[in-house]
Image 1 (cartoon, rainbow, N blue to C red):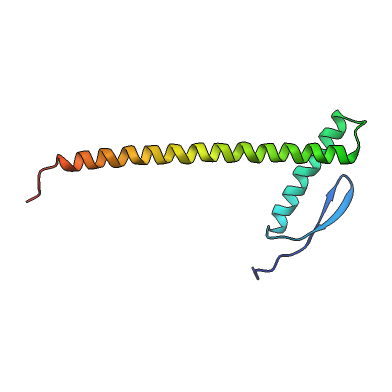
Image 2: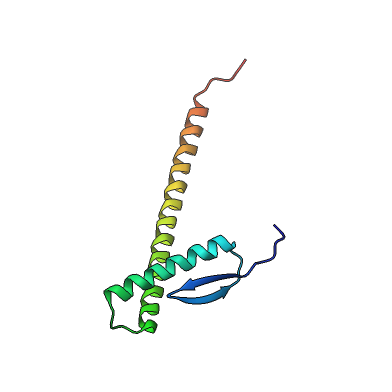
Length: 102
């Protein structure tokens, strides 16, 4: 890989967009497919809403998912920290009860 971002054409609701970023072309395509899928689902459920309204709903949904993921990550991080501290205490306790070696 040469390190340069390569542009990729994606299709969202039948419109072509040229994207370029730090993600691989495959990842950009996957992101576009997810956005396209969410927009199409909302169009099916809310056929009278404007495209702008649907786009805002998708953005809010993605922001909510991001917030949820961040909260889950923080909980896991706190759990790992707590378990690590418990293991350190156990190891220190065990180490103080071991007789000195030969």
